[in-house]
Amino acid sequence: MLPLAITGSANMIGYGLAAIGPGVGIGLIFAAYITGVARQPEAQGRLQTIAILGFALAEALAIIGIALAFVL
Amino acid sequence: MSLIGTSQLGSESFTPPGPGDFNVPPLGSDRTFEFLGQHMYIGVTKPMIQVVLAGVLVFAFLYLASRRRSLVPGRLQFAGEEAYGFVRNSMGRDIIGSAEFLRFVPYLVTVFFFILVNNLFGTIPFIEFPTMSRSGMVYGLALLSWLVYNYVGIRKHGFVGYFKHQSVPAGITGPILVLLVPLEFMSNILVRPVTLALRLFANMFAGHLLLILFALGGEFLVLHMAVQYAPVGILAWLLFIAIGFLEILIQFLQAYVFVLLNAMYIAGAIADEH
Image (tube, rainbow over all chains, first blue to last red; front, side, top):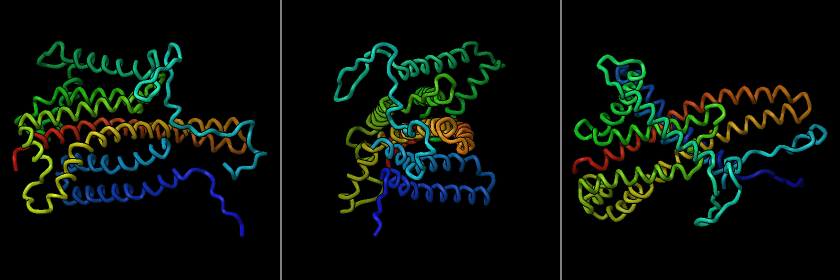
């Protein structure tokens, strides 16, 4: 039985797992934004503010993940 | 790195960048003193100078743009009006509402341009260090925003009324309040400044760290390894440039989102009773 030795830090595995959620979330947000603009193109300005806000909120978790992966 | 045979490595191995790269020693001596368990430098460090410089730049731009106040604006006045109007309209009036937003516009404009200039310091040559990647810089801003929206809410609703306003959602009665009130209290009053600060800090920190990684990694691949790895190093440098542009976008976006969320918290605090 060969010895299985994983070298490196578990921080990056943690970050990789943590990036799944925000990836899906941001995809959903922009899918809704594109659908909304496709149905009513005049609403693009108003929807863009909400889309950018939602993107930043969902991205925050992924960014906290990579920042803490280096610090902790 | 363990897959690469030692015959292909140069004289030293690659040390990846870490949070220690954000430790900018001061101009004078290197001595430190202890304060609340942290080592504080005696002397003026580069982020300190950058913060003061950002404040001076923002004040100079807005003051010079508004000095002449002619009816047909010149170029600088037009630029200042556009910049001020962007924050005032899209974040003040649209979010706080046209009745009460004028009180908060100076605060929102100042915070927006201050954070924007500080973030852009991460891209400007010879300064390349986003000051918001030092978490101490962000704590102050988050504390200020917390004080503003809580003070405004308490002044409008009274202390107990504000507490009820933030902790009890509209139209919910009964025993589920036992679960909901601590959750809402924590989420609205305790966690909001933390996430506000952490979002800005982590974005700037991660972006700067990524740029350092590409630059150092490319340099190591080109200069310290066997010659067939040099094109990979050049590719790393090209990605460094591309991610530099992405960083400019993220710097704008983080300043915008910080002020947008500030405006939303203020609007939520002064909203009318349910």
